[in-house]
Image 1 (spheres, rainbow, N blue to C red):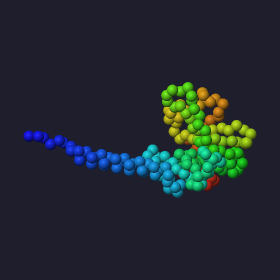
Image 2: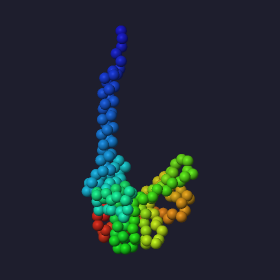
Image 3: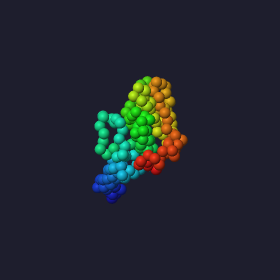
Image 4: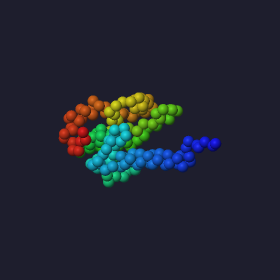
Length: 183
């Protein structure tokens, strides 16, 4: 007597088909989060509110083109900090700002963090050297390593950290004054 195999080829095809549908569905939902309009920004899988904000346009963006749906920002904190910079620019307290314009490479590093992309580049006046601002709600080990390597390999570049204390000070002082502030 020949025993019947536990799984037939037809059963395996069904299982693979179901799994591939689930994978496609997940990838579609992840894509939607990044491209939703600014009125309906929803959190991604990590709970971060990334998306385009129609009210935010940087002085310069990658490629020099402004997007009609606004600037894509990776979090609410970055969006609010960008609004704060726009407000400072309108008052004449800074000359201009850019979002993620420069990437700094750590050439001699073989493994681990090999590059750093600061969030904002800011000019106080036209003649001044620009400085960078990194908006960080929570400092993880990878971010700390980036900042340490930045200080070691690019000591001439000034990077300021906008951590929770700085952010909440800005929020308490200017959050009600600056339009479209996200809470």
